[in-house]
Length: 254
Image 1 (cartoon, rainbow, N blue to C red):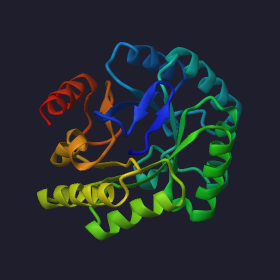
Image 2: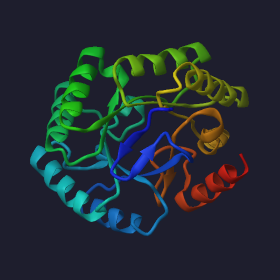
Image 3: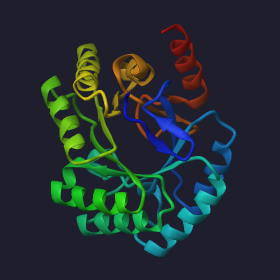
Image 4: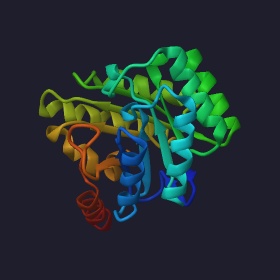
């Protein structure tokens, strides 16, 4: 029996891959308006990309907006993500504040999942994971390469390390430079799925070239995919409604 990561009523790692749509508003009003609009879409999870939020350095405003966002989303699970610029995010923040931001948000117990970047360092990852789990918050440990696709062995190694660091959902996103790079990502995904069948993982090959990876998760082993409402947060994201249609079509014929 494969491990399932349950957030509210959503079971990640069971059945059809789940659809996550990001919120990328710059102001509290934009964020809450986006959240209201998302309730009309077919999706499973929402990700708040707080690196787009212009008040991200004001902890109290972050918490206030988060509280309002949770109220607006109601029963839709929420991922809290600050993506550093080096991994494709909107801005950089000092490591000390990155740690504080994630710890403080975890302690509110308002979010369902927190995304933590693998390369902030093992000790910081472990600290955030421990605090999050103590507050019943699940953790995505992630890595994003917007320039290239590492070799299969490196992708596998990073995903396994995320599992060893006690991440609930290891995640890797890479940029293909050719069609073979997309196959490399899918091959690595399938290898980790077979080696660690009890650990759901999230993988994707970005840009239009990698779009097949966003819809083929049920076959190769990725349990969650990202779709766009209006503004995409990463290259290659498909609209949520179209994504839902294709995922269901594949699911019914597997």
